[in-house]
Image (cartoon, rainbow, N blue to C red; front, side):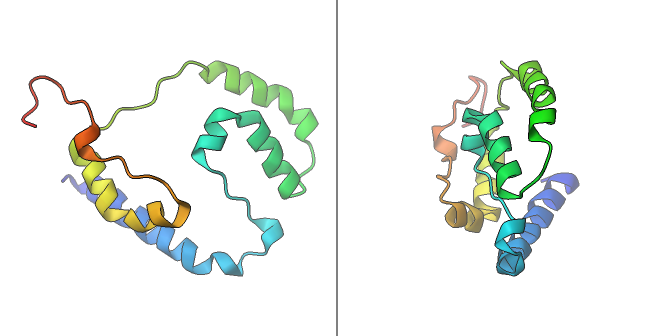
Length: 118
């Protein structure tokens, strides 16, 4: 594992654990959690929900820019990750999958290139 990869796996794990430990200290009106799937499926609705939940002004004025930004990334494809990366994420951030109810991707379920050793 490279130095950068090891740092990310370690730091982000510690960051998430600290957030979970301190989350109850954040007033409810100052915190909005967004599921990736919801943001991916209905991005504008999720942005509106965040504005509403945090009582932020200016959504109507910002909406055209949000739409323009979303239009510019329409059709982008997700990254694909290899077996090793998925296994390391599952190992280092397993608590986060449990906390937010995300299903782990099993490394064995990933398509591997024909020349792969797997």
